[in-house]
Amino acid sequence: MTGHAPPAERGPALVDLLDRLLAGGVVIAGDLTLRIADVDLVRIDLHALICSVDALVAAPLEAGS
Image (cartoon, rainbow, N blue to C red; front, side, top):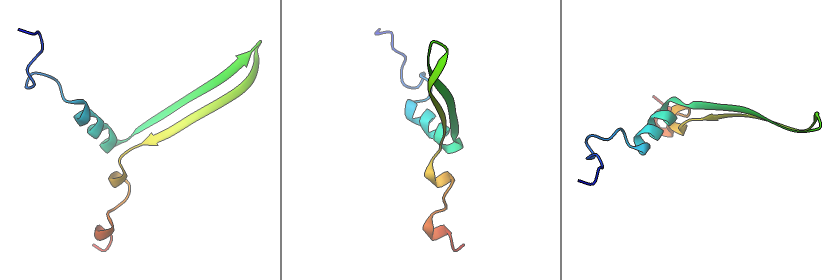
């Protein structure tokens, strides 16, 4: 025995989890501030939407129907 579970007993593959995540979409938000001696020098705000393209854009052949 190697201690590894057979493929049928493992959880979903990373590719399957990524596919489900992109199908629904995910929003990433964050703030980063570089501060020295209580003086804000640099502030970065990040807001990103990550999703699959086919979830937002209809296929060209489906536009007429």
